[in-house]
Length: 469
Image 1 (cartoon, one colour):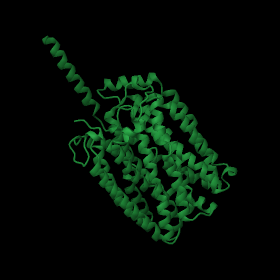
Image 2 (cartoon, helix red, strand yellow):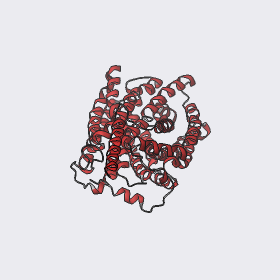
Image 3 (cartoon, rainbow, N blue to C red):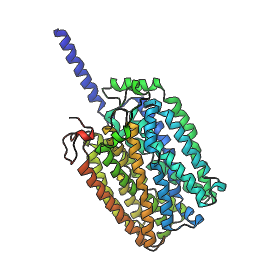
Image 4 (spheres, helix red, strand yellow):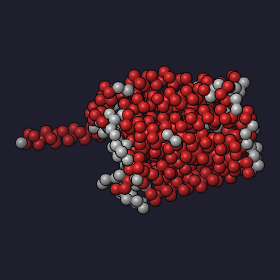
């Protein structure tokens, strides 16, 4: 009996030592297979993000070809972005039913093929000779690409230990700012070589996803997922799901049940407003540089993505920090940061140094809110509802695409494309949205991880947010 107790103590000490080692180092500890999955899913997301950002990079050319006013192009961009909300919730739920973990590839491949094909078709003059053809293809492309993001985010979470979820989602989501950075540089080069032929970009860029997804398909197998699970446990960490939980499970009422959680509902509203700021700046910056600051079109495309440099870094840093200090606290800091950054953007026309410095400052938080928000809703969701929760979040986020419509109205009312006043008014509108986000998170969410978990203050209960002490 005494020997048994000694063995038990030794086993506990061994587990504690393993857990302690797992927490050491700059980067979080995770099985090697988790890193491979993260890398492959990152590249898939880069292509998704690039397809979605092409129009923002070539906005001045679109305006000139179709002779569109500021308020009209704002409405078009808004319709394209908001269309992403059409399918995301239901595709996320469908993905949960098709299978989780490695098995999510079965739903992901169909969505990836859809948005890739629609992007490619946009490059054919016969289909986009008039604005209506361009708009139809881009609305459909957006609906599928945004839905694809919900599957990709859920997949990353399920290939990584719970203890490092914020880091993994932050690293994965750098595919958006760094993907758009790469797209901005690539598009600038293609425009310079093709004589500003924007359709060439739609024909060339999307094809790269075919070999990329094929490699991920070969990698994502039950054997590799079982290996991830066993090695995660050996490191003293917690798999997000077990390898036995990857098959389809039918559950009715999942969407309604998930929406009743304040962390998910209010988190979705806050991130929708945060996304309004992101797409607002993506819409705002290139035309401002081209029409107000008088950059040429290629230069405007290139210089309008400087904020994505720190955007990617911010996602990794804040995703990792949120694993330590909590999702709620991280979101509060970032929404305060964004309110300052958007205010400062009115000074980017003062010189190249101002343009670079302000964008780098703003970028620290422009993208950071998304992986932290994803982690918040996945932390709060019931087991097996990761795809549903992220689908709801991304559907809501897409509604933030209404901001270009509002900004277009402000720009038009302020004197049109070449007048500065309308652009500045639009910035004040975005600042107000970030302040609203700050108070929504403060008053109506609860902390899910870190020292403040179950110890913070809010107007909603811990139980309603899925938090058990």
